[in-house]
Length: 356
Image 1 (cartoon, rainbow, N blue to C red):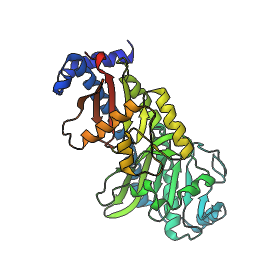
Image 2 (cartoon, rainbow, N blue to C red):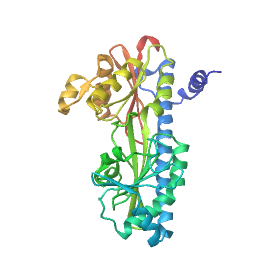
Image 3 (cartoon, rainbow, N blue to C red):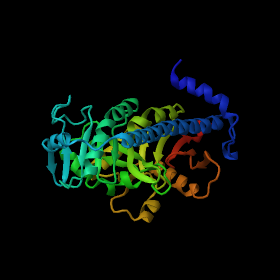
Image 4 (cartoon, rainbow, N blue to C red):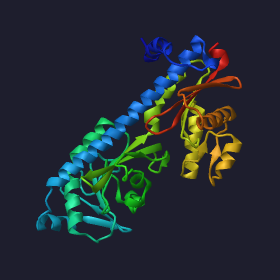
């Protein structure tokens, strides 16, 4: 039996138990609501796994930092003979390592950087020694969830990333402690934080980052981060939503930023326009909503129906207490579920004639 058919039959059973608004009370509508809720749960599970991976990486670093001694003089001397410097960014290279001094971009090996020029301290070398020992854990984290990058940043500007990032691209992270992937971590609350979806400049499309602070007692040791390539994460689950004839599914954040879409033409538009702008600029918003945000580069999609549905979801989300929510909008039955991990909205627009 095909996976989509199995999902359909399973949801027939669970849909009867879900509370559904009066305007979506028939059996077909209940099934559509159940489908949206189940898909949101699948996305939440995937995002939770990414967050747990970042937490695990941080725990591994903390444990290593506790028993990593200051490197001996000969080890420091080797490091000082093999680094490269560009625009204040230092790349420490392992000349004798399996990847060699100049690995290819995204080669399966760790990269080590220091973002304070040649102002090395004893703490710098100790952090580099600890990060070097962290390499197997970074590789394991990447292999278990190959969603682009795994990295860790210390308050002292030391930085490790897996897979390999060339120095020419690493300079874009100067200084990492001032970048969104570091500041999004909830240091005060000792909790992970999620960055707003953005366009990956290395060509991986729309991405989002989760970052978790790493503490030893009350001392902040680092921030551990994982990236999610949204196309990898959402393509299959959004496709499963469209087993209902004429249905269209999409993901937006709370401001309506277009994260992903099941319609291939719309998905291609997002990629093309974001690529031209070098930023995530496409929104599923009506003209009035987009204008109210006052964005310099923001633009709505060419699909007016999807834009209107996205606007309606955002407006209702301000007061909605019962999720998933279902309502009629023109000729569409609109179903929306809120992701627990990120606060994004998963939206399914179904022609009303398909669920009557």
